[in-house]
Image (cartoon, helix red, strand yellow):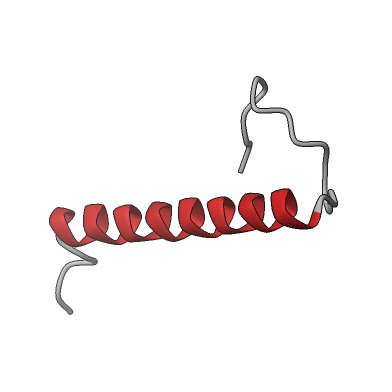
Length: 51
């Protein structure tokens, strides 16, 4: 059995995952801003998004 995963691959996977989360977060925020509706919680830029 080879080792679990080299460190660069783990870092790359985490980077891609974070990028996807940020992308969908920005997409959801822009859609909420356009429609003027709030789906999950009030938009407060000061508090920031918690994932």
